[in-house]
View: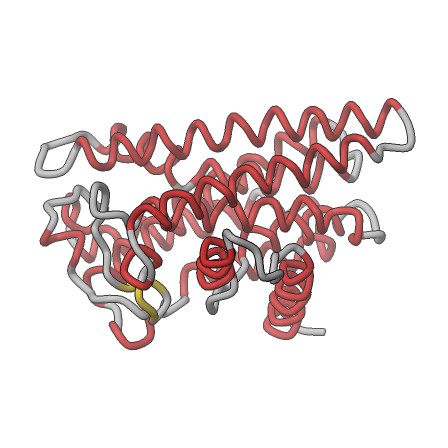
Length: 296
């Protein structure tokens, strides 16, 4: 199975699992649940849960054990997007080719849908901890829970700094810090979760963490480039919003050509960190290339 086939297979797998967690009963809070489904089941690449699954598979074959954590991550990522789109932050009207949730429903529903998704993610991880068959597996899952909480906190910090720095002059180090938190924290968590859950040793966890940090920045740089020159139809949202809002991006700070060079370099560095794993890391290597070359 080639990379693209495996990526599609993972997307389908994650979508099938997500469906199991949707609440479809006719309850008083039915509209809230509909808004959650609207946002959670929109067309998405599912890269973050895929990272958990594929990193786990580098060390163990029973990838089904990683699925609840993959689902919890996708719920949390969706929560972050819902809140990111809100009028008080990015004030976006479209996400993935559809109205953002606060435009489709209303702002209060969007806030509460995001809150609910984050809480449901915690419930899933807590349930997995309670099902641990032995102390060793329980310890690994508790470690994952701690890292999960830390990753959410980092994302919030990055989001805050991203809004606070609009229209300001900041250094490259400050820009990297923002996006190592806002975007990179979730990528790092996903790779580490797959490795920790599979029982990888600390040397492997640390090496894969370096890879994750690099693809996190890579993803953000590519996002900045697409925000400048991407195809609005493919992206499902308007192009140029970052510049209109005076956001500091890798393109607005360094120019398009330097941003593209930085993207190439960090992609090569990400791939290089995986060389010792050979074929076991082939999917992760190709994922780094996919992130660099994507058009939406």
